[in-house]
Length: 319
Ligand code: SF4
Image (cartoon, rainbow, N blue to C red; front, side, top):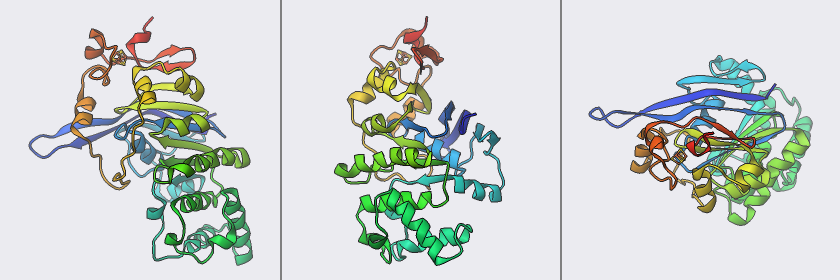
């Protein structure tokens, strides 16, 4: 049984004003599984639906339809109390570590609070022992961590600390949304590699959400490429990234898309005009930019075709 199953997930947003309302299918009937001890990546440009998918998995956003199943149990409509329990097992790591912590509060306070409030430690000695272990797992010493405010750390250190904090509850799965895009480029790889280390050390699974195929290539077991709400290609990371089949994956591999620095988790969908027109396009949503587009692509949405163990949503692979 997979650890996490996303089945036919769909999220529809209404955009525009009272005079011109339009429905945008931000996540369009996507399905994938995440196995135990697996790094599963969802990659694509900003506005492809990957963050909306993460929010729905974590219960921060409601799906329009579809199911999220964790350890064989549906979790998309659970009670608030059950959700709190579940969030111990399913932890999030966000893009900007500085927005995770209050600048006026010492960072260690969050750690002790989590351990005491969730009943994981009942003495300072026990709490210190757990904190030291989790900090060591992310390469931070206890001495450099205690009694400090967020601004006393670099972005890279603070992101490591926010990963250590996510580990306090011994989660089975981390949902990491662009966790290194705001970290200095020279440090990105070392932080991304941390996820691989954590998978080996604790058996934790990771849903890694990124625009960056290079980091994805190094750490992912499997990858799903998203474009305008759909998964267009999904399979083993090595196969998808070394021999991309879908014209969009081929384009993405050649370009280096940038993350959106203004993106916030608590804001509604905000699409550019091009993104909107692609979301509303008939047939294959990539047909306006695809160098291999055919007549059928403009009329019909392609189904998935199995190409050597990779599922590709493209008419080029019909037959
Ligand atoms: Fe291009 Fe057609 Fe494939 Fe879409 S279905 S990616 S337009 S060839």
